[in-house]
Image (cartoon, rainbow, N blue to C red; front, top):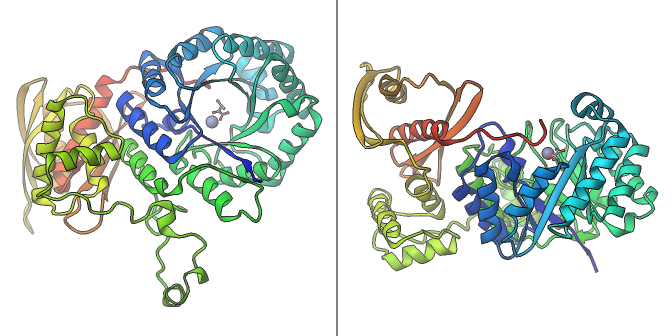
Length: 510
Ligand code: KIV
Ligand code: ZN
């Protein structure tokens, strides 16, 4: 019998630490539902001590999710652990994940603590956490650059204090696969009480090795991998969930473990995370990139047509490609609409909200005959889950003609009051953004503007991401519409709304 490899998803915590990827409570719950549907074992929902907003989001996920364990991150200090314990109170199954840095550079320069003090603090943290749950995970932050003797010492002490999972993070993405695998093996062999815990790994991708390091650890006995959808995460990101899961599944001849992930939910999860965070997936990204299963060369196409295994080691449909079947159209009724939303894990709070969204769905179905799941997700993001928006697009007129300067006239509602402006620009989007700035003079710097089609075909909705920066804060705004200039205006206003609404939050590792 194969061992079980625990999939611990940290999209909602480490993933959210990517600049601009912060999510609202509703967005987190939506992603958590998709992770639960996919069969993720543990969902790290956030860092409750970061802010009241984070606390509420972790609590909302804990109160909603039934089939996955919900975890909250806490530094090894009492107040953080208390916040995590409180946020997780309603969870069907809860875990507290506490951590403290163990590398010489982190202990000396960041914590300004001696190794003895760090061990003492870690042991206390496990004891505080166990007042809330028996399911406690401990991470020696920057383990990849920690001294092996010290790691063995602190890990033995936290096991004695009651930690059930030891997570070994390569916090700065420094280690090499063979080295990281051997680290896991050495820890398992040298720590006398190591048989009482599950070894986990958490790898960052600074050298592009997060997945390779995680898999090397699995081959050496790790039985939990911490990962994120699309590899989202701090800096270059974390190990990509879809790559870890598919490697283990595709190479069952190599790995002596298996996950319980229902892989056909992988692509929908990838699209949902990309659309909510505004981080597009590169086309050549393994498993979830648009080209991951596209065979361009004649020789490859010929081979695949004769026998697909000539060039394919996985089947596109097994990871959810093509699962976005056309389900709704302009003649679909309210009940069909409601049940499709429910199947996607979207529950609208009231009948009034359902009616409003249904009307918007009908408008979209008039413009675009085939409505896919991705369209519904975009519609919900656009129309329903917008945090108390301060600015809203009322109308937009754009004029473009060959040889003429593009021009935009926009009307925005700011807390109910209509404001209008017009502007020229180098193109229709530029004219629109300039018109918005004439009204709002936000003082922000545009860092990114990207357009993706949500589904295929020229009648597809365009999904626009706008990244704005102001005084060190970075936010991503999204907008979707069949008209990409309208989508761009919505995305710009969504980013401004986020700049307005988000409270500052603490970063766990700073
Ligand atoms: O990268 C890291 O070390 C972390 C820890 C908090 C586990 O994210
Ligand atoms: Zn991390």
